[in-house]
Length: 139
Ligand code: SF4
View 1 (cartoon, rainbow, N blue to C red):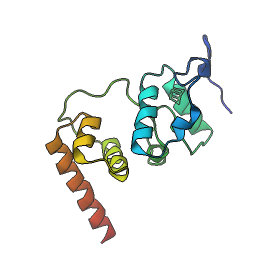
View 2: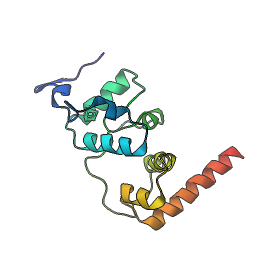
View 3: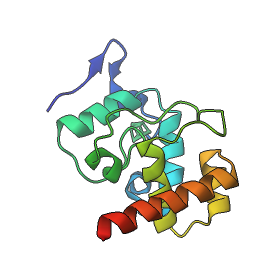
View 4: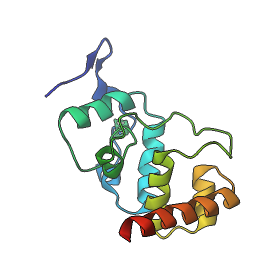
């Protein structure tokens, strides 16, 4: 096990989640995941946290603001400090994964657009593309 000791001590000592309900980082619903990721977003040790999970092959839970599904799909960077601002920025595989998670959590396009900081029109088009790709893959 690799422990990331820093001049300030163990990274866990500076975790934003210290003292919070650890269960929230194992949420499976979209709202719970969002709450946990929001905590991670502001965490000063999110990179150490994600590295720890990857190095130790930890499957379950949210680490560095990254969900288990995102890690399985190869995500290796922690959640961004702040959401990108342009509402029409290019879609990334992580964006698509987030849309899938929110759809699975029964979020409607308007909520997804608000969550991702994008326009409703852009989200509706992306959902259509994601469904089309899924149908083509299943055919
Ligand atoms: S990144 Fe999230 S789970 Fe990891 S230490 Fe920080 S707040 Fe806790």
